Structures are given as C-alpha cells and as structure tokens.
Image (cartoon, rainbow, N blue to C red):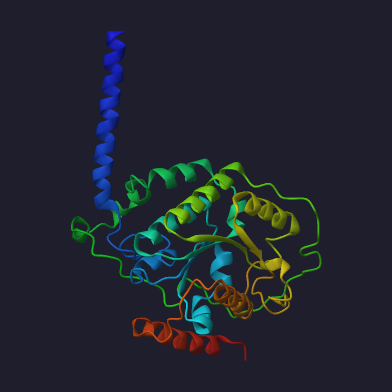
Length: 321
C-alpha cells in the first residue's frame, strides 16, 4: 500500500508540475493582440476586442447566418445604436461562449443576440473539452504558434489593435435564387436539441445575467437551414428558460424576403438586399426596447458615421448594374 501511495503521489506531483508549466507557457503563447499576425484565430469575430471599451450596445454571436444577415452599420444609420457581430463559420456554442467571455472583458452590452442555427449543430466532444480547458490553459489553443513566434512574443501584451470596419458583417451583393416551395411548412412537431447544446445555452444565459445583459434568441431567414420543426424546438427552449425568441422565418410581413433576389447561395444565406430587411427590422425592435441611447450626435462615435459613408459607397459600387 505504501508503494502504491508513493506512486500515486508521484503521479500527482508530476501532473501538478506539468499544469504549472503549461500555465506559465500560456502567457508566452497567447496572442499579444487580436490580429492575425499575432496568431489570433477568427480575427473578424474577435475584432470586438479592438473596439473602445464599453462602446458596444449589442453583441451578436452565431455562425455565418449571423454575419451575412445583420449589418451593424445599417442599425447605426437608423438608430445610433452600436453593435458588433462576433460570427464565425460553423460556430459551435462552446465557441460562442468563449467569444462572449472575451467581449465582456472590455464591453458592457445591454443585449446579446444568439443566432439559433448553432443550437442544432452537434459539437464534437474533443471540441468542447478544448474550448473549456483552453480557458485556463490557452497554450492548448495556440500551441502551433511556436512556428511563427518572434522576439516580441517574449514581451508583455501590446493591447488589441484590430477591428473590422463593417463591425463583423460580411457583404455580398451577388444573387442566386432559392426554391422556397416547402419552406416553413407548418407542423406541430419539434426538432430535439442536443443535451450538451441546451446546457451551453443555459451557461450563455447565466453569463449574460452575470454581466447585466439580456439574451435574445434570433433565427435569421434561411430556406436551407430552417423549418417549422426547428422553430418549435427553439420556441420550447425559450419558453422553458424564460427567454425571448424571434424567428424571422415566420415574420414574412415584417421581413419580406424575396427568395428570388435576397440570397446569394440559393437560400443558405442572405445577400445585402436581404440584410437590409433584417437590419431594418432589428433597428425597429431595438428602438422599441427603449434600452439604448442614440449616439449619432456624440463626437466620440464620429468614426461610425465615417465608416457608414464608406460602407454605403462600397455597397453602391458592388450593386449589380
């Protein structure tokens, strides 16, 4: 028994020592700012870290549906409210949580919008483990950085220096019509949500509550990804958790998507004309909450007006002739 105890103590000491080493190395491997050159992943989604502290009213998380459907600059144009889309392709809820944690480090949004497609995306167990453990040992996420590390990596962090001019939105002016024949056909059946995903939604809700933010579930229009079974599943989840849920796939009057013109990939994602309709709806919704202040006359936010002007010029240039 003594020999076994010594062996166990030796293993515990080795594991503890290894954790201490990995924890120490994490400060070396973690990106010194949020740029691609510094090793940051998903730089557009993480661009919120480059925004001035406590300057963002609304944070959006989700996969590509979010960053092709919501334009913060259009919402700014109509309301003077600031928002940022922390969207990434095929985003898992575990990474949505990570992005929100990072956003809350420097921002105090009053509203967090979770685009709901990722709630149905199965998350590989190894991904969940990596996202959870890398919160405490970032070296596990950034271990490949040894290939590109320079002398600057041995110096203290130099702060976050990157943010995207479109505030996370991705512009597409192309058009490719969708077949919407059976889109959103009514059923009383509900698509089941994976247990792990439900748990992560609850954790995201708790995270928002801890930081004084309201969580809104939002389904953006998509003939490829959405149906009434999924609508019912999210509605049931929202009811159980006491969350507000807006499904724009059911609001054809308020958001009149023309599936022959408002998508660039046959109904998977919206193009800019579709984004305009979604963003205008959200602008009216945000105004109705009376949670925010119009900042268009505030000199601290003058750059938003400059970015809007450049954005509209780019939209006009990209529009089909």
